[in-house]
Amino acid sequence: MRIYGSNATARVAANSAPRRAGAGGFSVAEGDAPKSTAPAASLRTIGGIDALIALQGQDDPAERRRRAVKRGRTALDALDELKVEVLAGTLGPSTLMRLKSATADLRDASGDDRLDSVLAEIELRVEVEIAKMGPPR
Image (cartoon, rainbow, N blue to C red):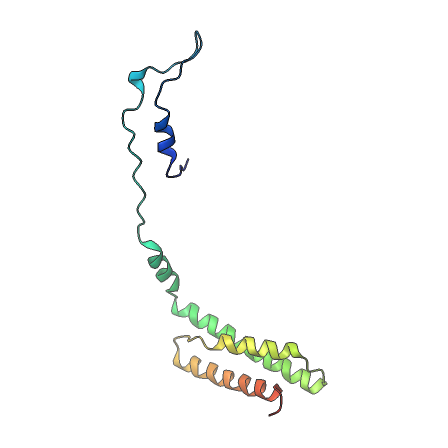
């Protein structure tokens, strides 16, 4: 399938004079040349970009819940890593970055009130640990 730009028909229409070929060659008679030089109709958008964005925003409740559970498990894993590093005495700045990343992900609602309350408690615990690791005031 060929796709021409908006000037493709204008370029074809500009060459309306018949070409003369040598003896015995191919030539186009003037009566066979196209009569209309009107540009091709432009394509219409069916739904527009707003409709596509709205469709992408529609999530299945089960999918939202699955992602929320995954975010909660990631935050709990980061808290476990923090516990292990504190007990081993090897606490590093990368742990703080993982905790902050986990906190940012927990703020999205899942649609399930009980799951959202559990995620809020996990988020609170992560925020407390981040505050503990921060510089003393």
